[in-house]
Length: 395
Ligand SMILES: Nc1nc2c(ncn2[C@@H]2O[C@H](COP(=O)(O)OP(=O)(O)OP(=O)(O)O)[C@@H](O)[C@H]2O)c(=O)[nH]1
Ligand SMILES: [Mg+2]
Ligand SMILES: [Zn+2]
Ligand SMILES: [Zn+2]
Image (cartoon, rainbow, N blue to C red; front, side):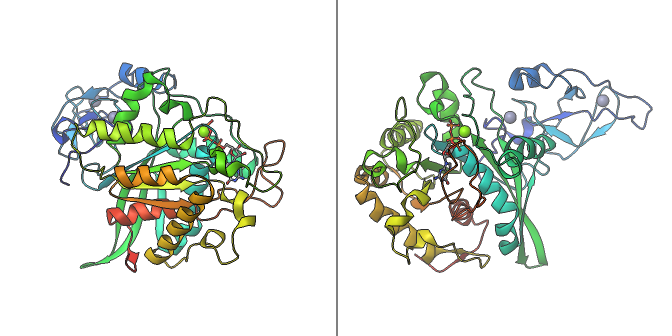
């Protein structure tokens, strides 16, 4: 890979040589064994998890897959990030490592979107693409099931507002997955892996000054950005929403255009004043589109599902892009369009509905269940831009 790898847990840039090791704490061939102990760096990063004692950390050539622990002579395959001490994914630095940043204002639907997106990727979309999505570490799998999937799919409840990362600018816990796709190559079918890291931010993380440092690192190191915009937070769209749609409060919420300019200026500033547009692909995703279906024609691409043919269909995606651009005019959102055009070399519009309809008055999933529309399109677009998913058609 051309550029230096970035830790999917803390988003710091690493030199492969500096990757460190953790002893596995097992009995070694010479009969010695290292005690598990507290790791102050892990404690500092994650604050909690008192049960998490771990083998000692040691330095060796991080470009190699294994190293011998100087205390017990045991061989270890646990490679850890030198900055945050989290165990790196298997083959880190050798397989594609893609960080996807997700940004959105408060209550724009980020947590629900991420939960439904990952669920779809693990089920319907996974099947259509012959793809798998697995937690890259045990903590991700446990957190995804217990904190996200169970709550929405089993208990049918919405989420409380996500905690901000500002209390400790380093305390971020992204969900890290391995996306695997069987691809036909020279030597038959073989799986190709991409590490994906998702970080569910709280809306206000992008409007307070304390967290700018963290968010700058997070955004500038991302390979792709999902910008989730809530049309119900656009003054021109609120009146058009289906009667009975609960409208998010606007107090203290960053309107979509100012969130966009905040993100743009962070990315532009990190380029050190170079004038060209930002190259990071940006998926501009409008959430909660179910609130506007009653105004759309029957044939609107936003009311149908993407074709499930195991490829990213470029033509279908462009028709969604145009439909959303057209809607932006009705929503008085033309400044958004102009700002994107001026700042980003690669952006695309998407319209999704994670739930398929509004939540009930007592914040539960409607009786008809979760019926997502087009939630996977933005991620599949980014993956196709990275070359990790095949494209069909041109545009
Ligand atoms: N109509 C409709 N409403 C949705 C949809 N997705 C989310 N919502 C509503 O938006 C609310 C906020 O969703 P969250 O996913 O918790 O929003 P968030 O962006 O994570 O919010 P913070 O964590 O506070 O920043 C939900 O409680 C739902 O009422 C959708 O697909 N359609
Ligand atoms: Mg949230
Ligand atoms: Zn040891
Ligand atoms: Zn790290």
